[in-house]
Length: 122
Image (cartoon, rainbow, N blue to C red; front, side, top):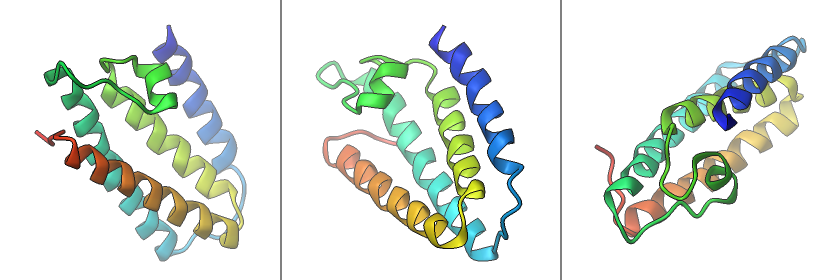
């Protein structure tokens, strides 16, 4: 049920946000691609939790949607990427840049921590 709701809400939110006419630059695209790359790594690491009996998902939002032993990881992270893009598209240039850099930094920290505790990208 959780995935179905997210699969409906995320695209609807994306369409709503993407309709806002705000100038988009090549730098915005580069930051979105950086964010997408980072969450792709995070997705693979999150999926790897299932291979470790001693690890559970600790992120409060991901845990709510995926559970302690993550299921539907790919759908969750695709939705997350679409939501991020929609929010980025709806923001004015200054706040957009800040949002993108902060989320890249935050998720980079998550990926580094996941690597330190032994989660792999396979």
